[in-house]
Length: 228
Image (tube, rainbow, N blue to C red; front, side, top):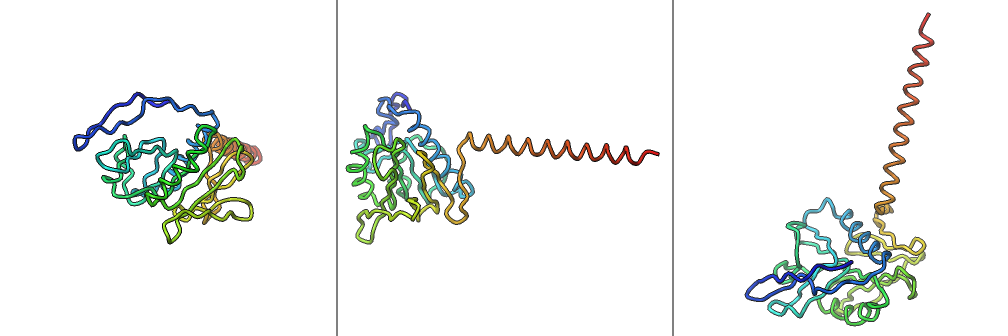
């Protein structure tokens, strides 16, 4: 997903760029999975005005130093409003760090995701950190880490089916073939991708039309039988 050229913003006489001006080389699969994860978490918290879900957005974590920046693929922040739409996310202004970050791993980001990013998110107090490799190059394909009482990340123990439960967001992350699925833990309800939602709507429409046709047929039959 290509980034736009940097448009520097100025706060407290410091410029905080919105982008580094470099393209993000990702496969279509990586891009689609990032979009799906962001959309699924937005659906999960759509009724809660004070939960922000974003991704592919610069997160500045130290005031007055624009070099201290990270760009999570997906992040969920509780205790901050959804609106207005952000151009960057600055921790000292928002007052809350993400409770969850997810990174969709690729060959070019794998080492950074597992080492330096993991250490940074741990230091920022981000409670849960999940890694997902859509190309299944690394096993396990999904990994999770959760802050322990000592403030250090510990691996999230997988469920019997290999899925991982997020305590902070109330969802379960599981694999369906090569793809990741976000499921509401309490209900087991999966969050659908756009093509799946379109297909479900098409099925509902077809069923409704079939019912309407059957009702019309029965009416015609009743009218025929009522004639002398």
